[in-house]
Amino acid sequence: MSELINNQSKERQEKLKSLIKRLHEGEDLESVRTEFEAEFKDVSTEEIAAMEGALVAEGMDVEEIRKLCDVHARMLGTKVSDIHKGGTWEDQPGHPLKVLKDENRRVEKLIEAEIVPYLSQEGNHAILMLRVGTDRLSEIKKHYARKEQLFFPYLEKKGVTAPPQVMWAVDDEIRDKLNHVSERLATPGVTVKDVKEEIEALIHQINEMIFKEDNILIPLLEDKLNLYNFIQIAEGSDEVGYFLEPPAENFTASETEEEPEKEEGEPGMVEFDAGSLLPKEINAILNTVPLDMTYVDKDGHVRYFTQGKERIFDRPKTILGRHVNMCHPPSSVHVVEKIVENFRSGRKDNEDFWINMGGKMVHIRYFAVRDKDGAFLGTLEMTQNITPIRELSGEKRLMDDDD
Image (tube, rainbow, N blue to C red; front, side):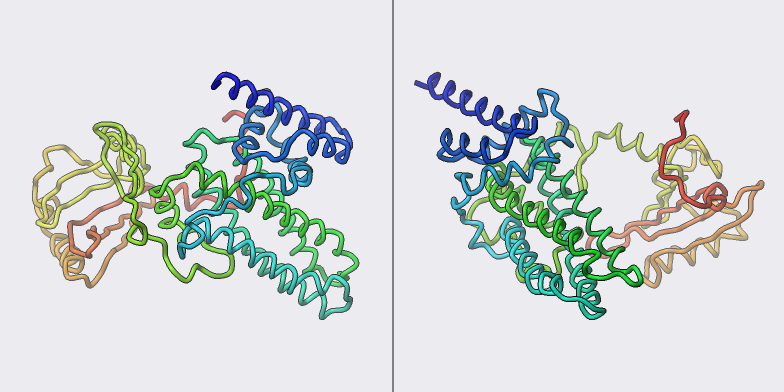
């Protein structure tokens, strides 16, 4: 029986893939849709994700799928079986999926109230209102960034890669169009007639993306991600930002009965606030950073220093465990003591110096190292040759030919 079900599933997948391919080859949307509606009562988000993944695996470029993904959405219409599935997250304030969906409703409301009415008017007032509306609509970039930086990584870890790639490409296109429309609206003498077609195309593409997020992405996320994933997403959301306003309530594990399922790292890894690394990776990273770094503990003893390729000051290993006062000439010990005392008391958190040394401009920075409760743990010294940085001018956006 299971073999029969698997064969039926494969047949559905091949048929769906064939229909999408025909759209990409230029066949009329309506004729393909007629056949689709005859063949399929509905399709699931899982099938859509698998279909896009299979097309990418067969060599179809993500950009090619992006070009016609709006057509895909129009063909699928309300045939996606997961659309009205719902879920407990809809009743959980601050849940990342609820925030995502609520933002889509705010986007629609903004477009209808602050942009569409002025597309049928003319004059400076209409242009001004379109500029204001478009500027507020540009906050959707935070919505897309949250989707790309927080949701997509978890889908990719679950093996779902094609839909995120396609959506990201469309997001980029929407961002570019938003920027272009904003520039056009700021051009002296521009009229509504000049920009109406571009704005309508932008609105259409945003609405198509809303459809995909509501009816394809959100059910896919609900199916693939666990509670711990959503907690991590919620914790990272404030840093990325929201569309116009943050959620009124935060989403935390305490608001659910289920315990978060934490992801286990590789044995021997050191856990950090963001990520985990093997000890050899930590050592290599610190030695790769183009700075000399020295750490002195709260009692004033040298505990660690980097071993990078470019050294500013000599740091023999014999200084490890030595009191910092004994590592400086007597004439400058009082300066060191004052820096540490300012850090210990909380009066300061950093101190900067810069000196000319052997034709180099050397930047020396001291930072108070504190724990999450603000308790003083020690002092970090960072020394860098900033001469090459001071000589920078203009911009460099591409690699050199010989890189």
